[in-house]
Length: 182
Image (cartoon, rainbow, N blue to C red; front, side, top):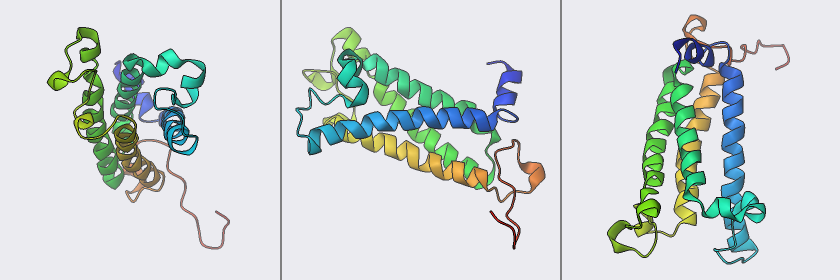
């Protein structure tokens, strides 16, 4: 990626880029929360519980490419927006990034679908964690593991403990002065 674009993403454009990224992440969460609700609240068969998009575009949910694309987008966002984070916010962002690297590798196992050679002789495409747990639950768990430290990082980023000169972007809220409304 061009250094100038990366610089803008982590300075003057960081707030906007972070908000767009958060919107995408929350939309992804809507999908992952809808699916367990369909299974456990509405008692739909797992094969029919495709989240919100799966109702209208069932082929999307059964396509590992969509899931891989989302995992790749999450990974790219965590990597591209990382430079503006400082101090404890950077630590939490890095934690989220590390977990997403593993989540991405799990999705990379889509090569099984392309080759027909399934992990440990399983009858269908299987991730490493699916050797122990079924598909829906670990996927929600992975997304939570990535999301929680990401949100902590964003909150810390909005209220940095670092001096003003150390902050690289305009995301931080100005400090609230005693006696003034927030």
